[in-house]
Image (cartoon, rainbow, N blue to C red; front, side, top):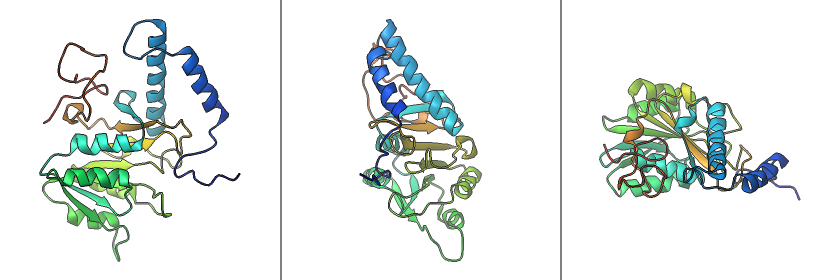
Length: 249
């Protein structure tokens, strides 16, 4: 069999991935953050190692890596966690449903969503975005590579524009992480979202959102409330990044 569906998930994984997954299940089978016994601590260490690996690859801070089940969860966390009613967000026709559908949900809750052209005639994408920015524009979403067509967007130019205008940059790197150089340090106030199971050759059920140092974690509204192993008697989610966020702004 010749496998050509790596845009959906990479296969086969490197042999070391299979072996490491088995080792962790056998040797680090505790519940991280839920105990102080050896297995729980070993599991917590493995999770932190994953955060460190993501941070090293993308030039970020491991404390600002939120591990998720996939890129869809990372994008939902970012978009629904940072956008509020009355905000304006710019996206493009290249965006995957993992972006478009959360934005559709947000539009029904009062967020204004607008598409910028991917192939404008006679001018750059960044120039067009610059004209479309409003006083209430809170974020620009960029898909660095499409999973349907062989096209991407000029991330560097758009990032420079967002930095000048003080606007959040949301990067869908689902088809870019592991396949092209990316650095959160170059993007200003930004979040990079990606799965672990595509270009990074990780396991299914893995993904992350990497937040830049310019983002205040207390501004990220939590999508889910519940057990985190931190401050268990407190009815509110803890304001410790990335395990929990303080609600609202």
